[in-house]
Length: 232
Image 1: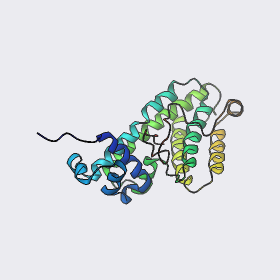
Image 2: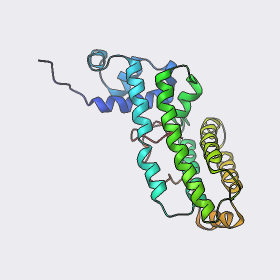
Image 3: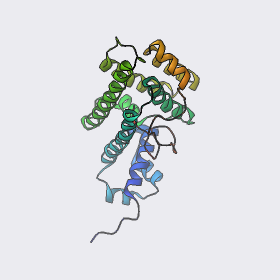
Image 4: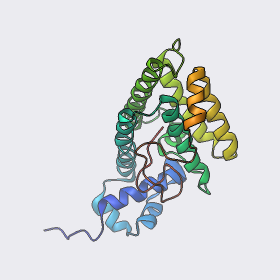
Protein backbone atom coordinates (compact mmCIF):
# COMPACT_ATOMS: atom_id res chain seq x y z
CA UNK A 1 0.00 0.00 0.00
CA UNK A 2 1.52 3.32 -1.09
CA UNK A 3 2.00 6.22 1.25
CA UNK A 4 -0.63 8.94 1.22
CA UNK A 5 0.51 12.09 -0.57
CA UNK A 6 1.40 14.95 1.74
CA UNK A 7 0.71 17.59 -0.89
CA UNK A 8 -1.99 18.68 -3.31
CA UNK A 9 -1.15 17.40 -6.79
CA UNK A 10 -3.13 20.18 -8.43
CA UNK A 11 -1.14 22.75 -6.44
CA UNK A 12 2.00 21.42 -8.10
CA UNK A 13 0.44 21.91 -11.54
CA UNK A 14 -0.58 25.43 -10.57
CA UNK A 15 2.98 26.13 -9.44
CA UNK A 16 4.27 24.66 -12.69
CA UNK A 17 2.08 27.02 -14.71
CA UNK A 18 3.69 29.96 -12.93
CA UNK A 19 7.22 28.61 -13.35
CA UNK A 20 6.86 27.70 -17.03
CA UNK A 21 5.25 31.08 -17.70
CA UNK A 22 8.19 32.86 -16.11
CA UNK A 23 11.12 30.72 -17.24
CA UNK A 24 9.82 29.04 -20.39
CA UNK A 25 9.95 25.38 -21.32
CA UNK A 26 13.72 25.24 -21.81
CA UNK A 27 14.50 27.37 -18.76
CA UNK A 28 12.45 25.32 -16.30
CA UNK A 29 13.79 22.34 -14.38
CA UNK A 30 12.36 20.08 -11.71
CA UNK A 31 14.11 22.06 -8.98
CA UNK A 32 12.30 25.27 -9.89
CA UNK A 33 8.90 23.55 -9.88
CA UNK A 34 9.63 21.81 -6.57
CA UNK A 35 10.78 25.08 -5.02
CA UNK A 36 7.63 26.92 -6.12
CA UNK A 37 5.39 24.06 -5.02
CA UNK A 38 7.33 23.54 -1.79
CA UNK A 39 7.83 19.81 -2.31
CA UNK A 40 10.86 17.56 -2.52
CA UNK A 41 12.23 15.96 -5.68
CA UNK A 42 11.33 12.50 -4.42
CA UNK A 43 7.71 13.56 -3.99
CA UNK A 44 7.74 14.98 -7.50
CA UNK A 45 9.06 11.83 -9.12
CA UNK A 46 6.81 9.60 -7.02
CA UNK A 47 3.81 11.45 -8.45
CA UNK A 48 4.71 12.54 -11.97
CA UNK A 49 6.36 10.62 -14.78
CA UNK A 50 8.53 13.49 -15.93
CA UNK A 51 8.86 17.25 -16.17
CA UNK A 52 7.57 17.03 -19.75
CA UNK A 53 4.40 15.33 -18.50
CA UNK A 54 3.91 18.12 -15.96
CA UNK A 55 4.43 20.73 -18.67
CA UNK A 56 1.75 19.21 -20.89
CA UNK A 57 -0.68 18.94 -18.01
CA UNK A 58 0.07 22.53 -16.98
CA UNK A 59 -0.54 23.73 -20.53
CA UNK A 60 -3.81 21.79 -20.71
CA UNK A 61 -4.99 23.22 -17.40
CA UNK A 62 -3.96 26.71 -18.44
CA UNK A 63 -5.80 26.61 -21.75
CA UNK A 64 -8.91 25.01 -20.26
CA UNK A 65 -9.28 28.00 -17.95
CA UNK A 66 -10.38 29.94 -21.02
CA UNK A 67 -13.58 27.92 -21.41
CA UNK A 68 -15.73 29.86 -18.89
CA UNK A 69 -14.32 33.13 -20.20
CA UNK A 70 -15.37 32.30 -23.75
CA UNK A 71 -18.80 31.28 -22.49
CA UNK A 72 -19.14 34.59 -20.63
CA UNK A 73 -18.18 36.54 -23.75
CA UNK A 74 -20.78 34.73 -25.83
CA UNK A 75 -23.47 35.08 -23.17
CA UNK A 76 -22.89 38.81 -22.68
CA UNK A 77 -25.35 41.25 -24.27
CA UNK A 78 -22.85 44.12 -24.24
CA UNK A 79 -21.74 45.63 -27.58
CA UNK A 80 -19.12 43.62 -29.47
CA UNK A 81 -16.58 46.49 -29.68
CA UNK A 82 -16.64 46.88 -25.90
CA UNK A 83 -16.26 43.13 -25.32
CA UNK A 84 -13.36 42.92 -27.75
CA UNK A 85 -11.61 45.89 -26.18
CA UNK A 86 -12.08 44.60 -22.68
CA UNK A 87 -10.89 41.15 -23.70
CA UNK A 88 -7.73 42.45 -25.33
CA UNK A 89 -7.15 45.54 -23.22
CA UNK A 90 -8.00 43.82 -19.96
CA UNK A 91 -5.57 40.97 -20.51
CA UNK A 92 -2.79 43.30 -21.60
CA UNK A 93 -3.33 45.68 -18.69
CA UNK A 94 -3.00 42.82 -16.22
CA UNK A 95 0.24 41.79 -17.89
CA UNK A 96 1.63 45.33 -17.96
CA UNK A 97 0.80 45.79 -14.27
CA UNK A 98 3.00 42.84 -13.40
CA UNK A 99 6.56 43.86 -12.60
CA UNK A 100 7.99 41.00 -14.65
CA UNK A 101 5.43 41.38 -17.48
CA UNK A 102 5.44 37.61 -17.90
CA UNK A 103 2.25 37.35 -19.90
CA UNK A 104 0.54 34.30 -21.33
CA UNK A 105 1.86 30.74 -21.07
CA UNK A 106 0.30 29.80 -24.41
CA UNK A 107 1.72 32.78 -26.30
CA UNK A 108 5.12 32.36 -24.65
CA UNK A 109 5.17 28.65 -25.47
CA UNK A 110 4.19 29.23 -29.09
CA UNK A 111 6.95 31.82 -29.45
CA UNK A 112 9.52 29.55 -27.81
CA UNK A 113 8.70 26.16 -29.32
CA UNK A 114 6.76 26.88 -32.48
CA UNK A 115 5.56 23.50 -33.78
CA UNK A 116 8.58 21.50 -32.56
CA UNK A 117 6.59 19.35 -30.11
CA UNK A 118 3.51 17.61 -31.51
CA UNK A 119 1.76 17.23 -28.16
CA UNK A 120 2.19 20.93 -27.44
CA UNK A 121 0.92 21.90 -30.90
CA UNK A 122 -2.18 19.74 -30.39
CA UNK A 123 -3.06 21.60 -27.18
CA UNK A 124 -2.35 25.04 -28.59
CA UNK A 125 -4.18 24.36 -31.86
CA UNK A 126 -7.38 23.33 -30.07
CA UNK A 127 -7.20 26.37 -27.80
CA UNK A 128 -6.54 28.73 -30.69
CA UNK A 129 -9.49 27.42 -32.71
CA UNK A 130 -11.81 27.74 -29.72
CA UNK A 131 -10.83 31.38 -29.27
CA UNK A 132 -11.13 32.08 -32.99
CA UNK A 133 -14.65 30.62 -33.03
CA UNK A 134 -15.57 32.89 -30.12
CA UNK A 135 -14.13 35.99 -31.77
CA UNK A 136 -15.88 35.13 -35.05
CA UNK A 137 -19.21 34.89 -33.24
CA UNK A 138 -18.62 38.26 -31.55
CA UNK A 139 -17.67 39.90 -34.83
CA UNK A 140 -20.72 38.49 -36.62
CA UNK A 141 -22.94 39.71 -33.80
CA UNK A 142 -21.33 43.14 -33.93
CA UNK A 143 -21.88 43.29 -37.68
CA UNK A 144 -25.55 42.39 -37.28
CA UNK A 145 -25.91 45.15 -34.69
CA UNK A 146 -24.21 47.69 -36.96
CA UNK A 147 -21.29 48.20 -34.57
CA UNK A 148 -18.62 46.44 -36.66
CA UNK A 149 -17.90 46.91 -40.35
CA UNK A 150 -20.16 44.72 -42.45
CA UNK A 151 -17.69 44.15 -45.26
CA UNK A 152 -15.00 42.43 -43.21
CA UNK A 153 -14.72 38.65 -43.18
CA UNK A 154 -15.65 37.54 -39.67
CA UNK A 155 -13.61 34.34 -39.86
CA UNK A 156 -10.47 36.03 -41.15
CA UNK A 157 -10.70 38.91 -38.68
CA UNK A 158 -11.32 36.53 -35.81
CA UNK A 159 -7.92 35.02 -36.58
CA UNK A 160 -6.52 38.53 -36.77
CA UNK A 161 -7.90 39.34 -33.30
CA UNK A 162 -6.20 36.23 -31.94
CA UNK A 163 -2.90 37.09 -33.65
CA UNK A 164 -2.97 40.72 -32.52
CA UNK A 165 -3.51 39.74 -28.89
CA UNK A 166 -0.75 37.12 -29.07
CA UNK A 167 1.63 39.62 -30.65
CA UNK A 168 0.83 42.39 -28.22
CA UNK A 169 1.38 40.01 -25.32
CA UNK A 170 4.96 39.59 -26.53
CA UNK A 171 5.39 43.31 -27.21
CA UNK A 172 3.98 44.14 -23.77
CA UNK A 173 7.00 42.52 -22.16
CA UNK A 174 9.12 45.49 -23.24
CA UNK A 175 6.63 48.18 -24.29
CA UNK A 176 5.08 50.83 -22.01
CA UNK A 177 1.50 50.01 -21.00
CA UNK A 178 0.14 53.21 -22.54
CA UNK A 179 1.51 52.28 -25.96
CA UNK A 180 0.13 48.75 -25.72
CA UNK A 181 -3.35 50.00 -24.86
CA UNK A 182 -3.27 52.75 -27.50
CA UNK A 183 -2.50 50.12 -30.14
CA UNK A 184 -5.22 47.86 -28.80
CA UNK A 185 -7.81 50.64 -28.97
CA UNK A 186 -6.69 51.63 -32.46
CA UNK A 187 -7.04 48.05 -33.64
CA UNK A 188 -10.54 47.55 -32.22
CA UNK A 189 -11.68 50.98 -33.42
CA UNK A 190 -10.49 50.04 -36.92
CA UNK A 191 -13.03 47.23 -36.97
CA UNK A 192 -15.88 49.53 -35.97
CA UNK A 193 -18.49 51.52 -37.84
CA UNK A 194 -18.97 55.12 -36.72
CA UNK A 195 -21.75 53.89 -34.44
CA UNK A 196 -19.47 51.23 -33.03
CA UNK A 197 -16.71 53.74 -32.34
CA UNK A 198 -19.22 55.96 -30.58
CA UNK A 199 -20.31 53.01 -28.46
CA UNK A 200 -16.70 52.21 -27.69
CA UNK A 201 -16.06 55.79 -26.58
CA UNK A 202 -19.30 56.15 -24.64
CA UNK A 203 -19.70 52.87 -22.80
CA UNK A 204 -16.14 51.61 -22.64
CA UNK A 205 -13.77 50.06 -22.87
CA UNK A 206 -12.36 50.02 -19.40
CA UNK A 207 -8.71 49.08 -19.95
CA UNK A 208 -7.40 47.27 -16.95
CA UNK A 209 -10.69 45.55 -16.33
CA UNK A 210 -10.43 41.82 -17.02
CA UNK A 211 -12.81 40.56 -19.68
CA UNK A 212 -15.97 38.69 -18.77
CA UNK A 213 -15.20 35.73 -16.58
CA UNK A 214 -11.52 36.54 -16.24
CA UNK A 215 -10.19 35.43 -12.84
CA UNK A 216 -8.22 37.82 -10.71
CA UNK A 217 -4.47 37.49 -11.10
CA UNK A 218 -2.57 36.66 -7.95
CA UNK A 219 0.81 35.55 -9.22
CA UNK A 220 3.27 37.18 -11.64
CA UNK A 221 1.90 37.72 -15.10
CA UNK A 222 -1.56 37.39 -16.52
CA UNK A 223 -0.70 33.96 -17.77
CA UNK A 224 1.02 32.91 -14.58
CA UNK A 225 -1.93 33.36 -12.32
CA UNK A 226 -2.57 30.47 -10.02
CA UNK A 227 -6.19 30.86 -11.00
CA UNK A 228 -5.31 30.48 -14.65
CA UNK A 229 -5.62 33.58 -16.78
CA UNK A 230 -6.39 32.15 -20.19
CA UNK A 231 -4.54 32.09 -23.42
CA UNK A 232 -5.02 34.54 -26.18
